[in-house]
Length: 89
Image (cartoon, rainbow, N blue to C red; front, side, top):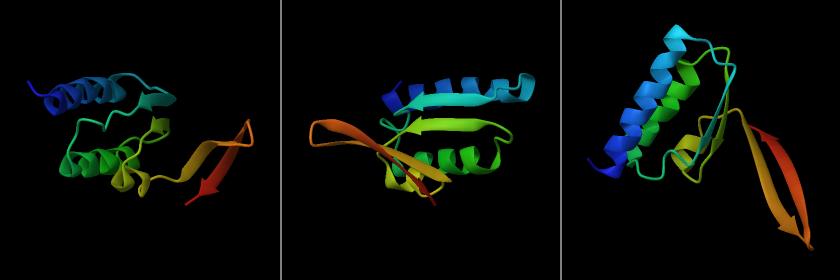
């Protein structure tokens, strides 16, 4: 199996638990790194419209996943200190 197929299989297993058990939040770190553009877009629609009453904390660098979210939290370095910013989209 390729990396994208393994990622999709793992996500399907993880997200199928949403129907059985209620999770208040998800913490996902660069799950879209091995996925292509088409599958990342499908995943973003699933996060936006299928998962209700849960918060998703997602670390990503993909633009097509960022465009479907409500808030962006950015952490950056400025003059030897860390700064944070929150943007509502």
